[in-house]
Image (cartoon, rainbow, N blue to C red):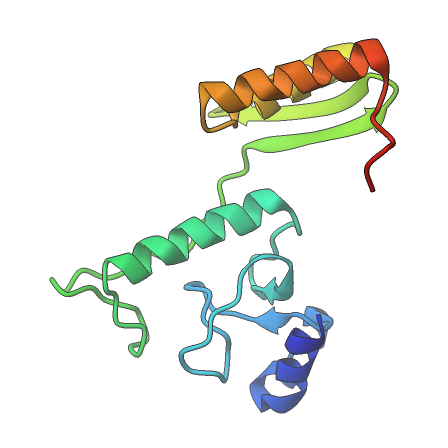
Length: 164
């Protein structure tokens, strides 16, 4: 993160918020405070009033959000970014879809949220949920087949240690 730390040290507004701890302070539209035209997302960004977890889920949603605003030609020079038709950009909102974590030896933790319902499991059931979600995130049937094939190959023959 040398680039981020360098930017934090050069922009006065960034040094005013010590709880950012080396991350770039952003507004609700992910604009870096004190650096017009610069945006930050993921682990290197910090929103003071709503801190987000440092996960790929947050970074992915932030990237999608910024990409959508850029593609629609929003003007970020205003206090609230606006589009060509005068519509105002909604601030970024994180949608927590849950947490999945592999804990080793065929076990995992799964906390999945869908609306008001929650699914929380650990152990083998959590591992099955983790694998199912991972498989559903593949972009094509070919990728799904390749992932399943790789899982089966690893199960029957062990991990391939010849590549590094």
